[in-house]
Image 1 (tube, rainbow, N blue to C red):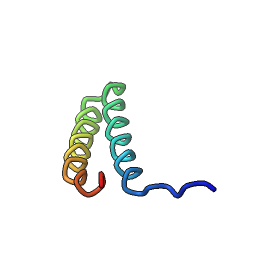
Image 2: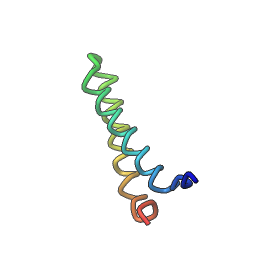
Image 3: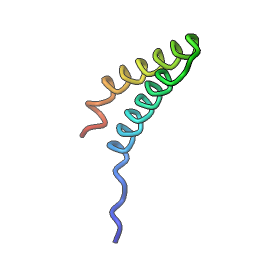
Image 4: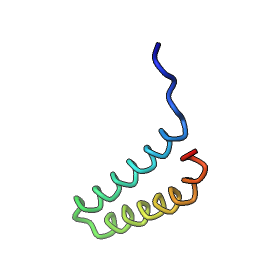
Length: 58
């Protein structure tokens, strides 16, 4: 029998992955405007991760 996925840890992992993807996009792009946007949104996800971690790491 396959165990059911654990929603909270999965959500936390997805937030971390999205943040890492945005940071990678910022490094790869040549456009300063896009670079700033990616970095700004990666920072927002990092802040979200901090706020949600007490609830999602139970």
